[in-house]
View 1 (tube, rainbow, N blue to C red):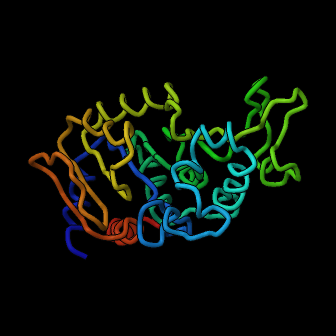
View 2: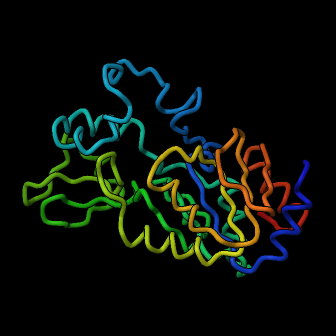
Length: 251
């Protein structure tokens, strides 16, 4: 594969690498992305076809049509049995080596942590955490998926929801601040598996002032490119698999 040697050299010369990723990081684990031909937004499910996909993942839907929202959540957001792929595993190894200082992810599946990454900034939250919207009580991972109630309800009467950032909601401040600080301090930024169309998350990369910018994505991205920019138009899992082999890293 072209450019793997160049990517290897960039990593060797860098000390503070940050990875910024989106849905494409998890597609090789079997989780559909959102906007591709086979993505979540293009899956024609008769139960939801009268709704816009963004609405089904919105605060408005949760509040005004909770039964619809939770039916969609249970059908499309269950990643409990999904395993990390080589992209997740490679990044965890890079952190273990002391090279990677943070993963900034737009995904809510928790696969980076499952692969072993510790410094993960979940700027869109996580489907693995649940809480009551009224009293704040936390509920286990399986609660919403295993509940027989159309609308999962807390003992206090409040609705139990996943700790994910829906459309119309603000991003979690602590995760945003951590992500921005990590990107701003990095000497290398790797962007992978994202269309960079979801804001404000996509704007975070503007804080990067380091030496090396690497873009690993199958489609073109409109990104301000620095002098030392490497673009690889391949699947990110495939790229990291080849890179690991070249570096002698077992995934």
